[in-house]
Length: 149
Image (cartoon, rainbow, N blue to C red; front, side):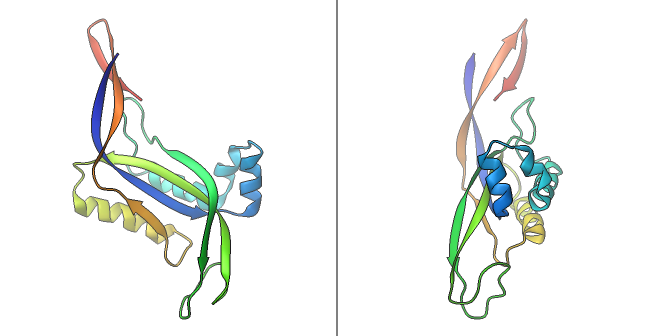
């Protein structure tokens, strides 16, 4: 098996989830992601973006983790959760995927805007990295080559 490095950029999205969804995930119920309306809308939107998560014969590849994000709401904000001057802790789903480094910058901005448009936070946390390399492996069977993750 030959290892190749693929130049990509990382997209990471922090998305609030209800305590009930967090509890179900912690208990091993992965179906809770699809049952949660917010997360299912995020996954649907990202599935409709062919630029994301392409690794050869694998499409829409993503990683996720559940955690918490904290913030203090400042004067003038219109928060979905929390009150001005109060520290708020929110259960959070962190979604990570990759797209080809050669994707046009206008397309990157459209992709991020699409997420901003459906995100429930007033100021969503969406990270877009600079170029980095991820590994993929090339499997050869009877003269045929394909990429696997």
